[in-house]
Amino acid sequence: MKIYLEEVESTNQYIRELCQKQEELEEGSLVWCRKQTKGRGQVGNSWESEEDKNLTFSFILYPEFIHINEQFIISELIAISILEELNNIASEFSIKWPNDIYWKNKKIAGILIENDLIGAQIKQTIIGVGLNVNQTQFVSNAPNPVSLKQITGKNFILEELLDSIMSTIYSKYLQLISDGNEDIHKLYMNNLYRKDNFYTYRDKNGLFEAKIISVEPSGHLILLDSDQKKRTYAFKEIEYILQ
Image 1 (cartoon, rainbow, N blue to C red):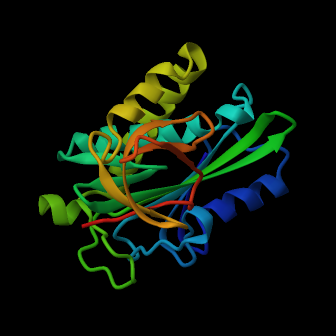
Image 2: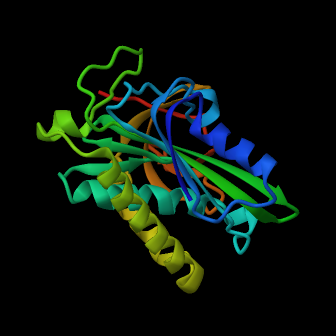
Image 3: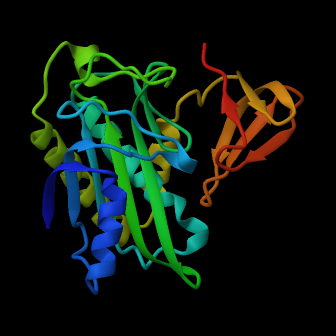
């Protein structure tokens, strides 16, 4: 099922409300819109999107085969899928932990994953994506947005781009079901933003230099600081210092 809306507060919330009205939506059911008025990012952040210029969409999966301790693989899969589609258009894209898509040092896409759990398994996952496509002026206080139009100078047909992204996501989801998560995690790590050298970060104790060592199946980021000490962080416990 694919639903197009002229305007909605949040595509993630719209999917959730559909779930409450029906026993179960078909897996892969998708909602996208021309204008999203209250788009959300990770941990309460907002998402700016000029109407009819960008892709804002949400869809639902039922990855009941994934244990809650390994739920971050869903974020990795979505990020890798979007990255691969963007790499067909331009170069120098990467994934900023946990799941933002960057072009050089600028953010082009954000992903919101909302897992509903039953015991140790995932009952359902609602995935929201915001991708800057044809917007050229950003007015919010987001520090570093960029769009495909700004990168390439070209306009893109939104629904065609959406269909390409979703085709890649479905393909990799089927791969995850049949082959497991090893290849997807490897691709995620290989395409991680700032993965090779020491950079400046900030945590609750201040600034420090560190290098990314790994990302755990739970989604925790593992860094090695300049004193050769390992540090572990959950979402929002650490800030990248962008220069």
